[in-house]
Length: 457
Image (cartoon, rainbow, N blue to C red):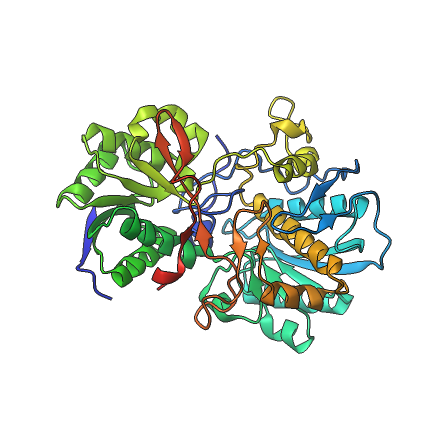
């Protein structure tokens, strides 16, 4: 184990550690996904990229979340076809491979094409696979522009070619900023990624626990170190002293116990753990074995049912930043309907499950595709209902300046540019949290939303 000190001054396929280096922590808060500290598993719904499912076409009636504008779902749209492009990273030999994000976005557009469209227009969806290099991202930008797209969506693209999009006057909307150039790009990101999620950890430490000192543990790898640096910068801004203890990607039970004891050695007010998956189980058990009773902040990954089923009441005192509880809403039912044909049946291995069997809080990285497309669908419906023509540029402009918009589900408000100029492309800054209490994972303070802006580094 190694230590560093600051006194408050400035059951699934394994995901590659490369994922942690680029999107560490960026998914802590998304209802349909989780984060990664360097060695974690995708959600059990992730399916092979080669499997494509037919679209659903049964009509449904619902309202756009967070708006008063009705969404027409009476049948296929009648407006002019809209060509939309998406760039997503897949097939990188270092393990950067996120096909479900593209597949689930495609599923959403196929649903729209049978049920009211995208702002009343049918969508032709063109996708380009980037390979995790600047050259492949640039090639995708040129390819999509050459095809005449009027809007580009970013899945997980490490090196978006903003200059090429800008020169062609093509608006760009993404779901998750990854690297620093994204923060101030000429683009809009529906979420704030690592910067906002790590800041919320410090906000909760300060506001809920009035913490003055923090003991932290995390794995010693590129992704975990990056995430930890974000938390530490936010703690510094809050004037909270911290000590970090680092361990291996995978530790024995004795190793996790040692890490928890070392982080708690100076009797800090609270602890923060950035381990995931098996590390969640190991750290929670180590915490209980050590007899520690003070609060622990961790990521929403550790609230997964597979973790809680193994640790049980040992998780008392643990708070999961960015976690959300299941809510039976029209949006959840719609999402289950759209994605059911795209989820592998665990018994048969074939594609397709009953809608009720789709776990909307466990869609992994693929869930980002539906968060992106379905959020924009609802915003487009409101925009058109107010009398604005549906175009890619109009949608971008409307998202950028309109108050009262929400991420799909109607819980998380969108406020693009609220943290400009440092984070001018970000559109959401608040998160829910959950905690283990009385034998269950429940919402903290009745669904309170914690604002990252005050402690953004």
